[in-house]
Image 1: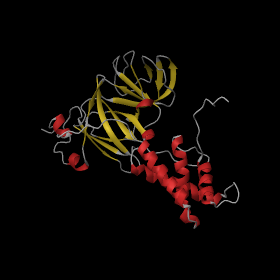
Image 2 (image 1 turned 135 degrees about the vertical axis):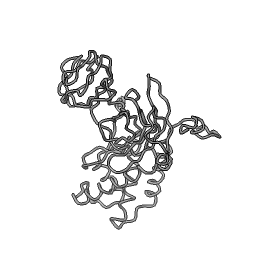
Image 3 (image 1 turned 90 degrees about the vertical axis):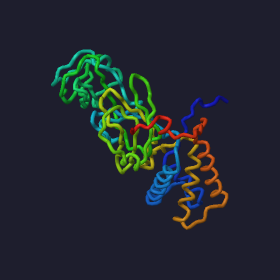
Image 4 (image 1 turned 45 degrees about the horizontal axis):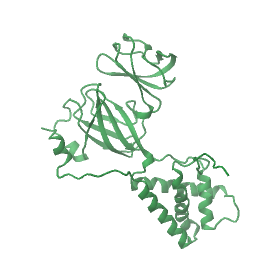
Length: 316
């Protein structure tokens, strides 16, 4: 018999819940009443959110792009300046644009769509942010907000569809200039806020990320002095919510059995039923195995000098 040719198996939140309740042997039928389903979905969501604090899940590792603002050292990562790199389209102006223009000539509009965010680098070394009203042709777009300043032919144009969500943690950061990635140094909260001259302007070489609630704040040092530099960074995104029991879960297929048995382990006290010892053991073994599997296979190098020494004393 031929194989299916597919590898897209997944389970909805409802199916994981049903499986967990079967493990507990609390169902006399193959359906769940709405109260049990609502309570079990809450338990599933809380379990998944707590797992986010236990370490990196490889499928949530994502690359992002931050467009800099001169004389600005603090950035909200839910603002107009940041997006997932895979979502960003970079092009240039194909003709000079005067101030107060809404019809913009671009080298290519491929991949752009109405309502996308668009940033146009202007001649006063700032970026004019707007949204695309229409994509008129392969070389022309119309934007909703007229340009504030003139922009020369060849100036950069950036577009993306969705602003960045709050990163759980940023793991690395690079400054991109002339297609060269320059690694940047991470600072702690105390190291950043103890810097004596936060308004010094130059190309950023260090960063500190404060996750906060809702957005997340990124601090750069020195303060950027031009829009020509672009920051790229790697971060852990949040695992997507299961807003309804009909939602698929934001997990790869190898985690589905682990979710089922660990949810059963979480639900057992609520139902006043002890989980079978072999099921509890399986829940823990599956999680340990997948945490080991969910690691990057790369060499680790140790050095007797710190990153700060390796890069030099940036603070003078």
